[in-house]
Image (cartoon, rainbow, N blue to C red; front, top):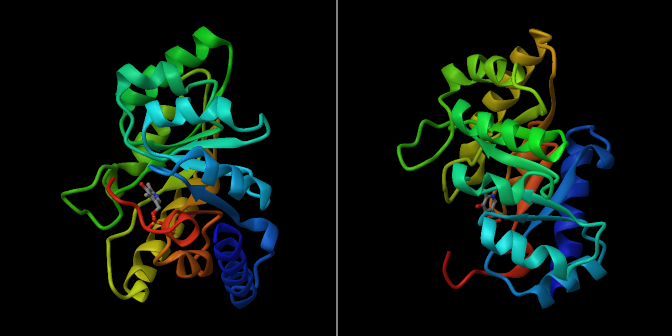
Length: 229
Ligand SMILES: *Cc1c(COP(=O)(O)O)cnc(C)c1O
């Protein structure tokens, strides 16, 4: 099942790239494997997936040693400061950094471990009350403040778009996040690049690609529905 699902997702990514005149190599598919057993991750790995996304620290660190070392693990869920030490130096990219205090903790931990931590700033682009992420108006200031911290590298922005029946509804939000990243890029802040745009999930990843996503995070579309989360 996973192999067939992946084939379909790959086709849809290809088509979206073509529609947007983008190269297929500009978009990385992250297989969001939260709540799913390691056997299913192995199947995805066998089918060529090297990027996996998890939203809980415990699950991420449990699964990590059970898959080959060339897997890139993405921390995509809300991160508490007291769990930062388990993620820094292990996750390839932390997508969900939404406060200076959290970034400071990541910086401290990265110094301690002698590594540089790559992070994305999570933006609550639709200003939903239920969602984490910095406000759109505050994102640029936050990026500037984070850029001053040692052992941290801001690579771009991430957002979780609203849940919707009609994915076209989210085009506007994806477009805004892209615009925000262009505006920040233009400031040429030291230690900041806006190369990464992490947006789009099972319901709307083709739209996100058309609007400039470089990482799409697809769970259900690859592994099937989750029992609970
Ligand atoms: C669960 C999750 C996804 C994947 O959601 P699907 O709709 O199953 O594709 C993507 N991003 C984040 C942050 C998630 O928590």
